[in-house]
Image (cartoon, rainbow, N blue to C red; front, side, top):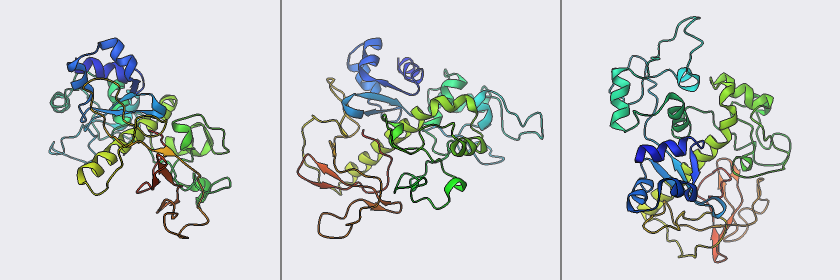
Length: 305
């Protein structure tokens, strides 16, 4: 049944509304146990809509001549992306192009992924393996102007894509299309085929959901920060659970407040007004249910999970 759940999610570009999933596989303890498996799924609630995001610990092996100690998938990245490799007919490709090799099948069976097709596996890895897709430029998303505070302009090796667009409608002046010249050039230089571009918005959004859930879990496990007990109303970050027995991936409810992309001119002036300052500049600040200011610990995408 877990494989059936995974296939339903992957058929919906790696994430699906919890209501839709439950209506297709039914409610019950077994279903709750499956979707709360944090090794394979992440629960989130963007704008109050509970979702389940698929994930995996599987990664592509990047060690040339690896004998199998990596426990990663021995497969050509280009073959994973499109089912073919342009370098085979040119100068040759040293990576494996056999998804069904004995070694790969052994690795996939250990993770119960052996029944996935190449396309399904590609969707799963795009949002789980952080090295498969180029990063989005946070400097581009900070500050006014065509390039924000990115000093490399069109020469930047990160994608100049609006981060807010990844998870919601946005009408700002930043780029909202992966087919624009700068992001398209970066994607092609990294071997991402044009056929995957329509699914990239979902892939990047799902990556952000997984990363945010992991961060909240780590903070909770460390116990380094006390969090107020807040109600479940609101449209900001929230636990994705309206279902009996479903344990949320995280339990912090945060309301967006005074968000802006540029640097805050008054940073450092007064207690509690330092803003969100990281290696990418001030990212705005948040208030926790009107109680006290909460500042995210490091730069992050503008996800409202």
